[in-house]
Image (cartoon, rainbow, N blue to C red; front, side):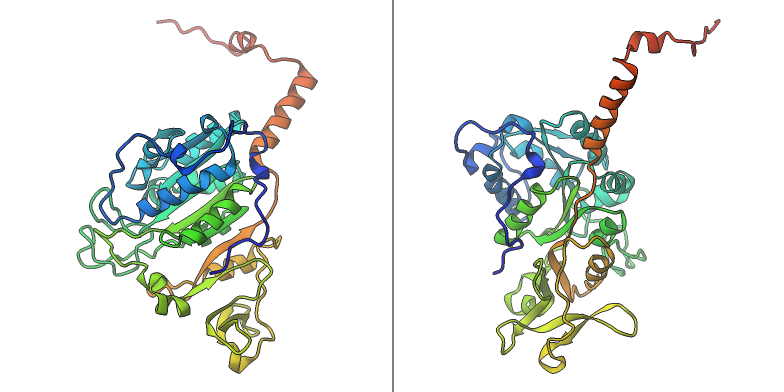
Length: 363
């Protein structure tokens, strides 16, 4: 199975966060709280992957914060032996923005779900992405409202039969990766809960990225939406359905061709400019797209995100779709404040509160 990155992570995005004293293990990041999700829930796999990955950062646990909203995934902070906050429905990105902007010595992670992030929290999510705050956002997508017992969510497919849509959902679903790219996110990736190796590789890349990193994690809800991503997990079906993206590599997948790479490839349609899947043994390898996660233009990354069909999941790209460098909000804000102090001197809060713009209210 291919890794999602070809270079060892440097975690340059976390250079201001204090380092840990001594070597850490997965056990160091497990809290004393009983993990309470439904047996078989995909959240268990994600939690184990994150706890296993955290020691790689080498950061002091006291300087790592997990902020969540409301939903099954939002129990995450209880199970991490770090600081954390179980916040308000949909508002985790807003709260985390304030924290990350005021405390560059912290590594701030947001854990949210498809309902929490894309429904009531939609505005907070897109503005965090466009501002490029130094946050790492893990968006668990199970295409259902699990905590409230099985209503359709913003990512449920059209026609989805649920308790709240007994005749089938009429809503067109969000594609979270497309949404993030459209919001000018500087880092966008997708992975799957049960693929520990791939998930960990994506987490490494996200942690190394300066600015907002959004990672969509396909996560199975075995109670209310079991098997939603089975086509991506079944070994035989996944061979034809999953497109594994690697920067600098041809976008090939499927059963191996004569050259050892996948027998299907992604090319650009000369007539429409869209991307399409072709049989490379018949079409040849000329024109097969070479993935460039660092391209300045988001056009191709967005086109790749549109390959996934909401109903059948053929063909679904996973890995890092976009990873570009642009100014980080926290840094820009700090520079602006320092410039203001140089130009105007240290601020006087008392003078501000009792300045000229005051009124006397007569009762």
